[in-house]
Amino acid sequence: MALYLVTGAAGFIGAALAASLLREGHEVVGADNLSTGFMQNVPAGVQFFHGDCGEAGLYNGVLPARPYDAVFHIAGQSSGEISFDDPVYDLRSNTVSVLHLLRFALDNGCRRFIYAGSMSVYGEQPDAPVREGAPCRPQSFYGVGKLASEHYLRLHEQYGMRSTSLRLFNVYGPGQNMINMRQGMVSIFMSMMLADGHIHIKGRPDRYRDFVYIDDVVRAFTACLTRRESEGGILNIGGSGRVTVGELADKITALSEKPVSVEYSGGTPGDVHGIYADISLARERLGYVPQVSPEEGLARMYAALKAGSAA
Image (cartoon, rainbow, N blue to C red; front, side, top):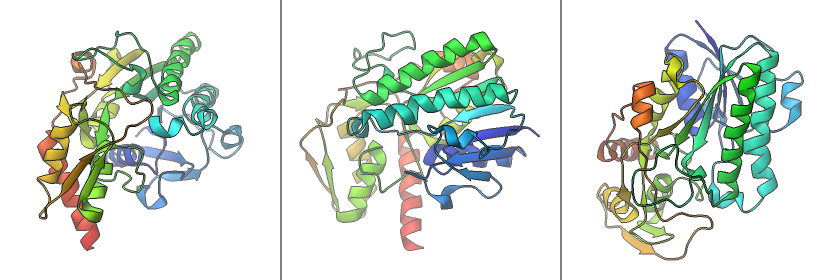
């Protein structure tokens, strides 16, 4: 049995990862400031601590000083749009938190750090699968902070830290925050559809993204524990390949038992026209192969939402 620290354990990805680690028989310590996560998301069995990873106070006697086998840093402000509201908070949440956690890990003898990076570091790219070596020109404060964090991980290699950054593309699935209407394209569209049968989409339908189901993301994170070749690396974690926003809207509205109207108007600060992942490096170093198609993943998510509303 290993001991893992999972930040963001009350959030979408962190809770799913913590649950997976518990099922494998490991011990999990979790932390979350509950700004967008919920206590009911924290899996039973997690030793949970309420606190902000960007604040020094969390590490001064709140989080237990124990010999963690690895730190999974999932917590953070996760919206490019929201990062324009308060760039200083975004920096503290997504970059200062990394520095605090790296020091905490080193002080406790932990030399393995696995980070939830983001495709937002790339910015606008040509219409082709983007590779990890592509020039990074982030267009949001969120993307800038995520890229800076990867550089801090690299610099800490000199202290013996073995880190991996998984650049996540558009993650979706059951357990996603359906209240936050400024983060998560799939969750936003489904929430609108279920609320009033109308989806308002900011931007054009020919924009495109890469959508990856939560179970595939969790498998990528846990694979980092056993695949040593992932250490010191940056890896894209995509799933669907190139899917346009219009195609996504069609797939989602097809799930509804009632007619759904779709409106395209407005835009989002820092939004790129399109991006999708080349995952060949993750396949090579992690054995990562997405197992859930967009059709299956969306159907699972919709069924879970319907079951929850009927409960």
